[in-house]
Image 1 (cartoon, helix red, strand yellow):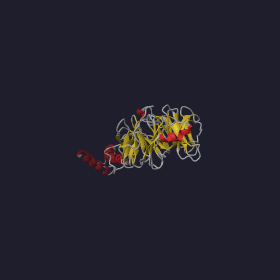
Image 2 (cartoon, helix red, strand yellow):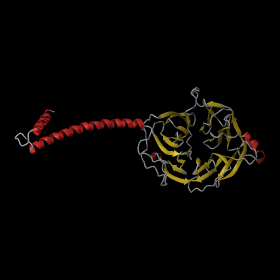
Image 3 (cartoon, rainbow, N blue to C red):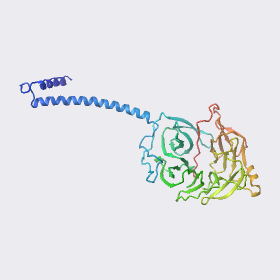
Image 4 (cartoon, rainbow, N blue to C red):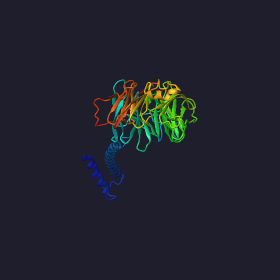
Length: 415
């Protein structure tokens, strides 16, 4: 401004006058004018500097969104599993649900959701470098277990058909979710942990209980408040989560398929007492330190390592047969109704078989529809229908596109 320039000129002349002359304003006037000039120069410099700070800050925000889009916003979570009560693994303290913006390192998955009649397709946004281990229908969205590149697993709440996400459990070696999705179990760092998410509004795991377990122990399935666990070296056991845990491993159990409808026990494959037995023995086990055989049927087709599932109503056990060239469905209400003399023969006739080449990717769409994956398309099997009779899950499915990357979502079952 002109006024500022005149003042600056006057101040410069005043400052350059010889000391002691009449023109010198080395006194109060001179000091005041020169001081005012210095203040104005500082203000102009400060304004220029502030503009630079604002520009840099705006650029930093853009970079932050670019590079941290894959991480949840809000308070950072502590390392290790969330909501631990032990001093070394404390609960997560953030109360604000994380809701990350759409990140650049995410990819979209197609989910096949359960329903009473037809399949429902949903859109899931998940980390690009992770693989989906399991997915569950929940009242407030979908619970997805991701296996990360380093092998650790995390449980993510994907809200209904949106990009809103919440990491509920991180850095776990294995995770399982109850049928009603209200309870979650995970293993990490020598501990077995159980927490609840009964209040979906909080979007976090609460009420966590932890017990020490042997290395390699993994959660298998919830049966009511009971958690079945396994260890490759020790066998199977049960933790009654409403009280403490004392290991009582059962080495006769080969695998556990799931719990009974009344939560009193489990259906499991057990070792056969007959020498050289190559077929499968299915047993109904009651909880009793840890299990007691109530009923058993042998001579059944051997289940493949993965893919066996009990129907939501507890009526059927369906599984790919070892070798993945057949699918078997057993009626759990009649499979044990045999005498010792004809147990193997009767059990064999109760195994309904479909001659299909399949993968281990399976799901019960509802109580009467078992879905299998041929690698090119999904097929529906009706346990009450004729063996080998199938229907395509999606009439419009492009077989050239295949089933890779499609997630089958476990149905929500009220308990």
